[in-house]
Length: 250
Image 1 (cartoon, rainbow, N blue to C red):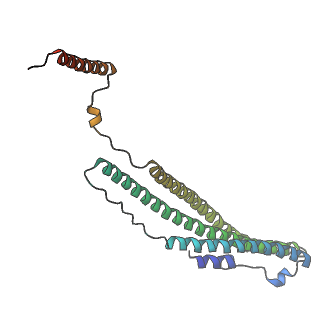
Image 2: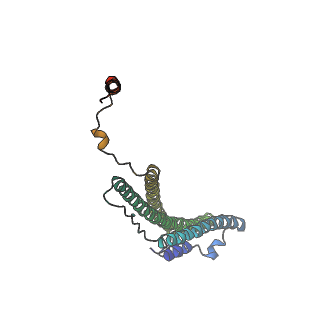
């Protein structure tokens, strides 16, 4: 159902014609009572019309925001091959590109869900407006019936059937709007989660590469190192002393 059709239904009250109490019969009700009934109905209709206008504007803005969203084309910068650190940077950049792609997809999904929710809001308020108009006519019909003389009655069945149809559309619109709201909340959560994943990657940076050269070194033994240093020092002293005590050759 198009937005234009919904607005027409909101203004007329019902899809297949709108039954009203004829003015000649409405005049049988006292003027003060008529003013009270019509005044209350006009206030409620004006409130719903303002809400419908706001919901319609929200649809237009949401549709525009989705339409102008640019397509995302993110390319990771190339790193020089053959270097462990360059490989780590390249892997990190690939993770960033993936995270940004997920944000783009989640943003588009959120914009679509928001548009759908606003559209369902228009349907809901339109249905509420139709119910308000139908209810106004039913109240009028009951007032006429109340003021008829003697055993005369006024047939209110058409007005009761009319409002029942309008209420059926209202309940259906209320259900679909609730489902659209759940979908929007889910899309919002997914978008927040994708942004948090990206922020975590940015804060963490690339993982430093590990080297096997350090793993090949023997464990440090301070006792062995001290003994080795002592032997080196003692050998150096003995060699110098032996050289000093040996008489020079002629």
